[in-house]
Length: 300
Image (tube, rainbow, N blue to C red; front, side, top):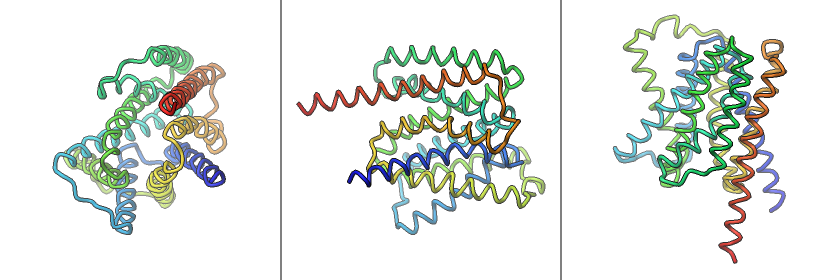
């Protein structure tokens, strides 16, 4: 039993490592954010659909439920558009450091959407994160657009997670993912149709980019999503949450190795990024500690 748990914990770190590599792939792919996200979501939708058919899972839902999936799909599409847009406007390190603020956007959104009380230490941590962001803004003024896009992306990611939290209680995550990916593709497609974006140039993709797109859609999207559901059968959500906080660390290190000089930042940037990352990790540790105390009280 202990070995099974250890293997699944290592598997989880591998999944988070893959998510960290997503940003690097975004920098390597020469496409702009809109075609990049459109092809990623389209390919991932097809892969998840094949998986669902193989597993013979239910795909019929009420119109009300599908409407909720559609809203979440548009939000995740916008999240990825701003995420890859931020990478193109700045670099991987800046984008991932700022994206770490998503946990604190979630701490603001959860009380609003779930009706729970605002937690004071989360507010304090949020202020500390603002200090970290100020340091990054102050020294990396040439990346202002990328930082703003990454902040929007972090907010959309938190909003998506909070909304999805309600869906996962009632429905299988794989089916939810299929519809959200499909509606995301549909939303971008409607925009491209009305804006005249579907041109010959849109579909003119190099073999180099196709290779990275397939890797992004299959391994970094479809596989990582399905595998993350699998490991949660053995690992608590709190451990998962804490481990996911390592994504920016893995991503920044990978970016430095793969992309080289374009990712070298000033010392002040790393001070600001470290403040944000440590605060996010501290938030996760406090939550895990509180949950363990709550469980002990319930068991006594």
